[in-house]
Image 1 (cartoon, rainbow, N blue to C red):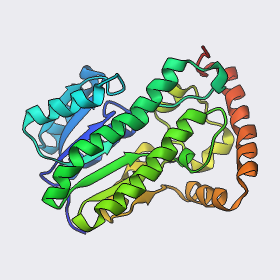
Image 2: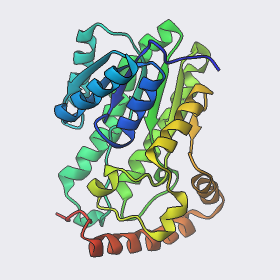
Image 3: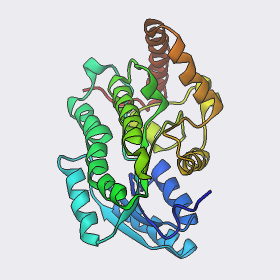
Image 4: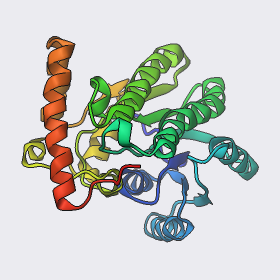
Length: 277
């Protein structure tokens, strides 16, 4: 398998924790140079310094709120100002929630769409033309198994991930002949800060589908290197996405409504559920 990362610059969004930080660690181990972005400058600089010291790679830090209005455009300007050719983009930044839609915080939901969808599109549009012109590189978009079906009580989040999944698959086909790759990585449950921010308590039924951040990223990068356009890490997660393709939509939505409703109640009992507006 060709070495596509060594000495190349990779831009990772949401890089301060969770899957984003794990992408940074594994890509640094592959000798990629990194541009790390998230809101927390302190966490980014700590991670960047550690990876530079351990692996001898170059790192740059850009601290900003990608989900703020104009955040993606600002990030593009700051990366351009570095004078660096971005060979790979990992659009990892995103968030979700677990609550009744009619009781949700409207600003939180709108921000979710802006970050999960709008920012991802803006970054792809900015960096893909250069990749196509050079005939190499590519993009990893973080989708989710939630994007394969509607999910009551996570309605906005699941819809944003369905967008990411379909957008990525379409882009992959558009650029296929150029030598550039685009992949949607669709994890199931991964124990990171995402669950706490979203107000989700993992249930016993989720345990079979759980993969660590390290394993999720390892399998994702291997699939990306092999030019997959969609990767669902973990057998239980993969089988789950197959199952919803064959069951009637009404059945899938009602079954998920029961499961997600139980998860919401468990999260409330555990004291981690997000407060409704």
